[in-house]
Amino acid sequence: LNRKLAAFGTTIFAEMSALATATGAINLGQGFPDTDGPAEIAEAAARAIRDGRGNQYPPGPGVPELRTAIASHQQRFYGLAYDPDTEVLVTAGATEAIAASLLALLEPGDEVIALEPFYDSYAACIAMAGAVRVPLTLRAPDFRLDVDALRAAVTPRTRLLLLNTPHNPTGTVLTPAELAAVAELAVSRDLLVITDEVYEHLVFEGAHTPLASLPGMRERTVTISSAGKTFSFTGWKVGWVTGTPELVTAVRSAKQFLTYVSSGPFQYAIAEALALPDAYYDSFRADLAAKRDLLSDGLAAAGFEVFRPQGTYFVTTDITPLGERDGLAFCRALPERCGVVAIPNQVFYDDKAAGAAHVRWAFCKRTVVLQEAVERLGRLA
Ligand code: PMP
Ligand code: GLN
Image 1 (cartoon, rainbow, N blue to C red):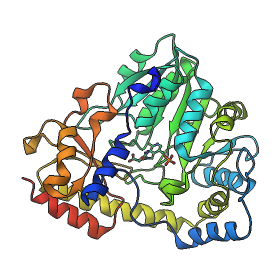
Image 2 (image 1 turned 60 degrees about the vertical axis):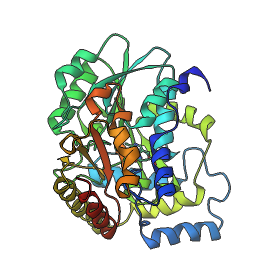
Image 3 (image 1 turned 90 degrees about the horizontal axis):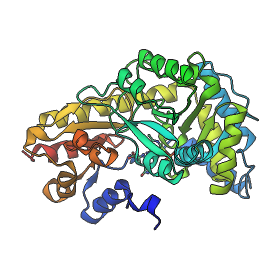
């Protein structure tokens, strides 16, 4: 393993899901739903396979039906106009979109400012690009963006900002004022922004504001999203990028040598999913809002300090009130202690101390599963 990757080891999601399988514990670690998305969308994928649509290499940018559906989605929810032919790129999940964007836009030695705690692939992909990550730490209990710290983090070597809202793992949703500060800085310092908005339809308070909708941002922003989260088909690996023709062409240049293309039949199914009526999106969000409350209340009753999320399907807690200090040790022992798996946030930090006692729980699970987990956790203290 080369020096760029050696530091990253095995992703925490693989480690903790393996632990859940080995122990039979309830898996509130890795963020995937335990119920598949709409049956009619699964049927659309099966139909595409049977009808021979997408069984051979689809076009490099993605099938036209899906690119059109992505552009329509951006228009419908945010009033953002993107040309499906030149400003939309389909990727192998948001994971590939992140990798291809960073590999395409960074030169070795460039600095990237990323919100810390960061989703683990950010650090690894910045390293693979030979660039340098500069963490901007969101601190408990509110995990707000520190605008002064952001301004201070910009140097002549800063090439881009890597944003994530709603934010995994803290559940923070950046406010319009925070987004405006980011936009102002990006424009004044001539920075590009990659914004990971995979949880765009999981905002429980207020509304999701795409960074690209702010003045001056459309021309410098690569927006990333994924069908895995919004339609509960994480295994299909259908993601996408929207941006200017120049930016999308750059990302595509990297993508063509990473996977070339992916997910043929699933692309047709996700094109149908994106066109589902508002009722689908509303009930998806309402269902997860109720589950957020169930798990957050249960964790609080079990003695954790709970940082109730404004978005995503994760809730972060502090384990200090339970007499614990090390989230990694806590998570490794938890399946044996009470049959539940969670994720230690410290793996998402350079500043380990800032997240040492934080543990993340996924609530994209059936209500009975969450109830059982809460009952087990209640026996911890
Ligand atoms: N970004 C964030 C913030 C995520 O939480 C995830 C999924 N865990 C991804 C990207 C990756 O998405 P996908 O499964 O579509 O590759
Ligand atoms: N995004 C999911 C999470 O944060 C996991 C995805 C993965 O395993 N790479 O839990």
